[in-house]
Amino acid sequence: MKTFAARLLPIVVALTAVTSAAFPGSAEASYTRRFPIIGCKVSYAHSHHDYPATDIFAARGCKVVAPFTGRVDEVSTVDRWSSSTNRGADRGGLSFSIVGTDGVRYYGSHLSSIRVRVGMHITEGYWIGNVGNSGDARGGATHLHFGLSWPTKPGVWWVRRGEVYPWSYLDSWRAGGSKSPVAAVAAEHKRQGDVPACRVDC
Image 1 (tube, rainbow, N blue to C red):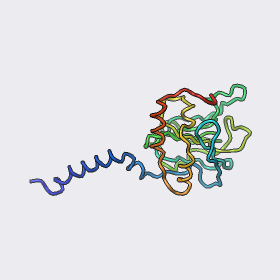
Image 2: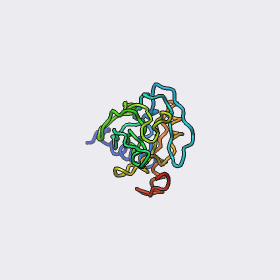
Image 3: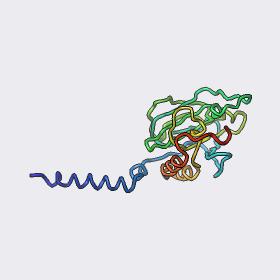
Image 4: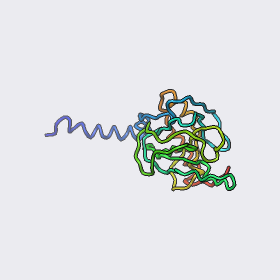
């Protein structure tokens, strides 16, 4: 004869499946997110030139941390940018991207140093590197260029740099919240496809 717990288990499993189907972001929304710069005064606008991203201004050397748990996807540890070529792939200078366990790719660039390598699994808040002005920010104000997108094959820098405006999420994380970009990124991915053509600042 089945115990009460054994009879109850299929019901719990079924209810969990229904809840997950009805509210696909419910488990993901409980995860913690972090503002990507800690321990420093920062400023950023609710706008960005040409394409969706946010430039977070902070002093050189401020700690850049992982906004979410995931796997380090791409890393650039050498500043190859040159004003004579201005290649799009080089503009970020020292940069990183993390594919979160939520399926969102989180990107940061113009760092002065990088402490992670491709394939590392890191948790939110992990120290990734330090604020700088590498790449095409050379000679300008030190800041972290921050972008949100969906994962692609390596080298698709025009998607990686940003496809969804991040500032409303940054506002939430800075205030201690954990607003999720999952739905917005998924909607933009569906609208544009996996690898849309580069249309601006290419």
